[in-house]
Image 1 (cartoon, rainbow, N blue to C red):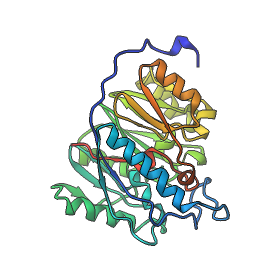
Image 2: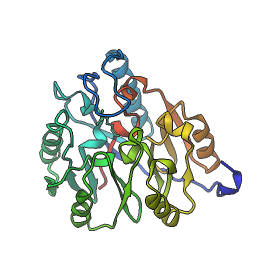
Image 3: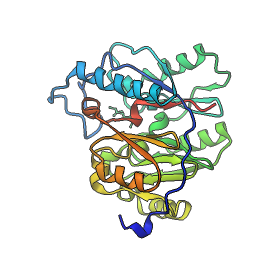
Length: 278
Ligand code: ARG
């Protein structure tokens, strides 16, 4: 990345967040619904839990609130809590999963939000995989389609949240969810891997976010974009070293994590983290 593209680092402010996570108590890779999953490749289940616990502890150390949803036996991908819903202004848009293997997760997450007393919980009509494909900036809800979420869910989200939704087409099967190709850093500041998007969507991103950090194929391939930012700290896979340096140059504090086992399911930091926005 040329330094000419990097805006001068500015002071960053952390805002405490509320996250929902799901312990990978039943995590395994026994089916393949994305190119990262290989049921023949062994997964260290105990290590998966340990790595996940470190992530949860890190969030708590950073001052965030972490809620937990009970893992359900037989739903190994439930650890990827980001997919469970999208919460904006305290309004909960439930998820509706594309694949039969994950379909029951939709109800499990809806039940959790209802049990916590969220007044507005919407059971969706169209397939949407929560924050896997919906990412919230200050001005927009960015919405991915092409592999999982049905494009019609974008209008459903726009009507429900009353915020403008920007549809973005994903074209690389490795980056099957928007949160594997793009991350929100702060306000309307984002980072993304351009090649993961169709030409029209790439042009749209250029127009809307001229200052965005464009992430290399190398950093994208180690799931560097599957990151969680609180406005100052950016938690991301530790292998994304180039990206970490670029974030530092912008004034962020990158924190690298090893989530090797959960990567075998096709997810990392962000996938394990659902943000509950008040
Ligand atoms: N195995 C899961 C799936 O393919 C991984 C989900 C990753 N989550 C995410 N937010 N990208 O659905």
